[in-house]
Length: 166
Image (cartoon, rainbow, N blue to C red; front, side, top):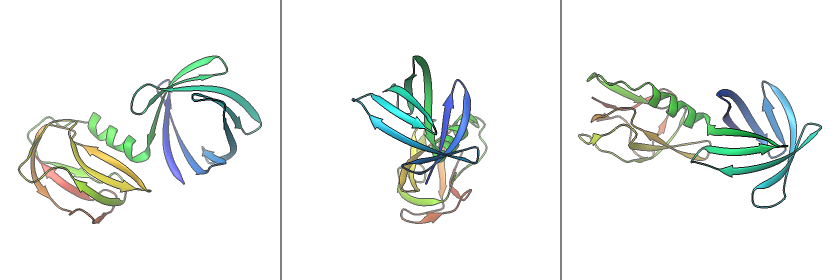
C-alpha cells in the first residue's frame, strides 16, 4: 500500500495504491490494469474505461503525460516527499531556532550533517525510510545545526524532532 500525491493543473489528489491492480481515490476503490506498449506508451484500463497514455519523465518528480490526445504536466510524490516540499515552502528566514520534524514515522537511515555544520536551504540533511522507500529530507532554510536528537538506525515517530538549527 503506497500513499501518493498526484498534482495535475495545480490540483492535488491523494491516491492509495493498494496493490498492482487497485487504486483508491477519495475512498473509492477502482480496479486498474496497465499494459506497456513500448518504452513510453501504455494502455491503462481504469475501471471500465481504457486510455492510451504516453509518459515522459521531465524532472525528478514531474512527468509529461499524453492521454488520448490531451497533454498534462503531472507531479507525482509520496506523502513524505509532499510533506517535505511543504516544509521547504514555508522557509523560516529569521534567526530563530528551527526544528526539523519527521513528516511520518520511519527509520533514520543516514544523517548527512553533524552538529555545528553550516547548511544552506535545499541541502540534504538526512534520509528517512518510510514504507520501504528512502526519502531525502532537505533543509528548509540556511542555518547551523545545533542539536541532533536521533542516531542512525533509530525509529522516529511522526512529528518527532530529529534535529534543530538556527
